[in-house]
Length: 348
Ligand code: NAI
Ligand code: MG
Image 1 (cartoon, rainbow, N blue to C red):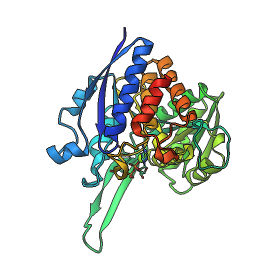
Image 2 (spheres, helix red, strand yellow):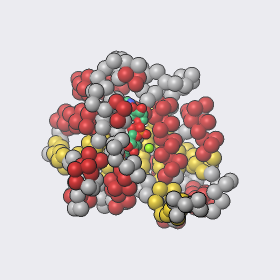
Image 3 (cartoon, helix red, strand yellow):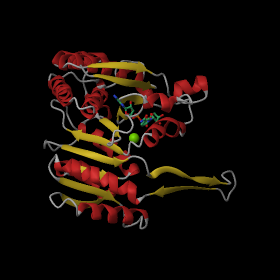
Image 4 (cartoon, rainbow, N blue to C red):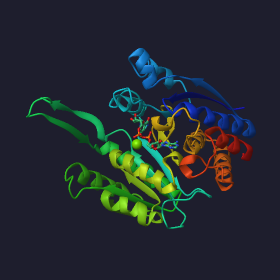
């Protein structure tokens, strides 16, 4: 019987409420599909930083490296400097483990009312470049307290970085509706993003069976709202993907519905699965957070490990639960966090 070792990092805020519910679902689905998961819990994040002065211990990455996958909630607390969570935890794991694909699917949930008038079925995946671009954190502040103060952040787009994310997107499109829309702003970012466009177009030529088009980020935000059904694989830079995926969550009906994977496709390192949102301190500790995105992230984790049947089973149980009206406050319902997980488990 296959056993998978999963590192569990709930992090802060609602992470501590939705991750345990997600684990319950994983344990039940594993039992049903004839494999086991062993979970090891790590209390890292902003809360850990308050006590220990760091988000994870010095040997934290070496520890995580031993696992088959990481099941993550989110990090950040109002009382901790908010430049630290990404730098000292999320980006650290993503870059050191070469998780260059951020896989963020968007789709309609049955029984969930969406903010859009269109009732058309939506099913697309945002493929966000996850290790470079605008988020490399290369830059500085010069004399910030003076009247000549300035701040600079540099974006870095490498051929290697663009090629590998483009290959991933085009290969993924082959398993879907065979269309890649790449998001850009090369009309104004005339160095970095013209290069992004150029390398993606070169890679596109190797996939003549895939329809490929290019869309500016400003136009794509409008199209996410006006005609989201036109998208299949949306290939974006790190910053644009960050913004578009919150919009994707909103289009589904709530940020709490979005699951995601930070994936190292070569499987040289563990991949990390987390909901698209943050630690939501405004609703933490009330057992009202929506755990569907966290549970979906568990399905993506199982899919990555090759347990496709179990992953599909989770998705079907999620759909049955939303269809039955098991909805949290953000979706206009009154189910608690644990009510949702209980319903999903019952529907597995
Ligand atoms: P957020 O995503 O935590 O919350 C935005 C809004 O969405 C809030 O009103 C929140 O209540 C709501 N929301 C989010 N998830 C929800 C869920 N599952 N169910 C119901 N409602 C939900 O973003 P915000 O407020 O900008 O950031 C809060 C903290 O999270 C910050 O410290 C930020 O740095 C951190 N953060 C961490 C991320 C990560 O660990 N990957 C990603 C994004 C933000
Ligand atoms: Mg984000």
